[in-house]
Image (cartoon, rainbow, N blue to C red):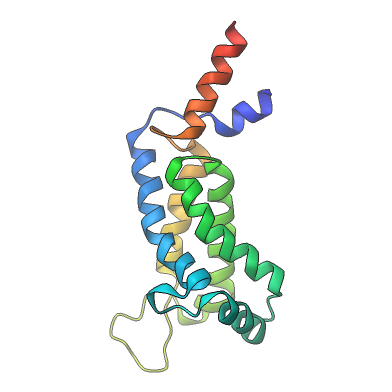
Length: 157
């Protein structure tokens, strides 16, 4: 039980709550593009096909990324398993930089240059937010905080 408490412990921080919410706002459209085809995305079938064609990423791994981006966002929003989800987002963003965005450099394609993709500055911001959540937990108004408080109280009894 002690190990579990270390994973879910968090401070009563509004800043961590805000970071959780911002990360959800940023990740939700990406997960919805891949899973549901919303916001101009290809949906599940096209995403898994393209990732296999373009980068050789197997179906099962693409499925894990899609599920983590979509359902992980819901978990993050309620502050449940925040450290685990943050670690998943760090891995996903590192993969996105490696497979796609590194070759375009740091900057986004602000001037819509034809034939040029997006750089990785966005991904670094997501990684920075996720690292903060990984290190500090989910903050105020989270299930993790509620569960950690219950475990501490039961251990004191």
